[in-house]
Image (cartoon, rainbow over all chains, first blue to last red; front, side):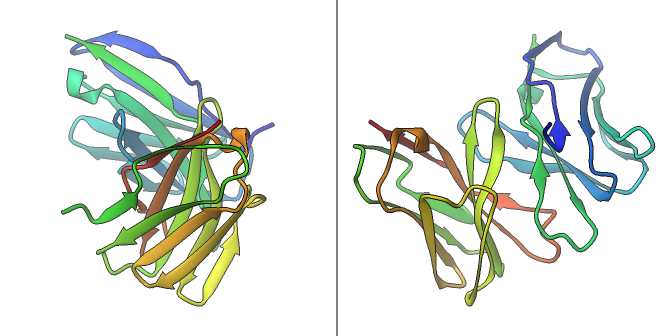
Length: 111
Length: 112
């Protein structure tokens, strides 16, 4: 079993929809959670960062962490065609300097 | 100019050949990483370096070696390439705890 599980998609939605992307994990020691966005033929870039449990909002994006369920989510409101990309979750332990990445979910937003 | 550059961007080679992938960064970060990305497997860490004198194996280092020539340069070598090393390779840098990693554009390597 992988430490981090993520549905590969693709997830296809119409423009304006609310998108929910999710990851589950098995290591209860994970404390730092990230979402990276990767456009086609590009390297990933950090989109959202959350420490421990709770929500964090940045514009149309909300990251949510539920440590009791070992489940993290990224919500995208009013999705745009420019949001079409692969979204990778990543996480690590306190003091553990390496990130563990999910496999990524490919999102397609149609006009 | 890009902060993290990788050369070459694309490479096709044959089984048994030695290949070097190069990474340079202008962000002034001490930490550098090499990952490979495969469909269905995501990003997997090959090697990482927290400073010029520090080199560490990642989860899939077999068949690879690295050299940290300077703070700004980190090279990945495949001593004798094999077809299952066909993948997209990314270099990344970070400061601090390493949560914000800055990735290069990637090198698409095909081993025939």
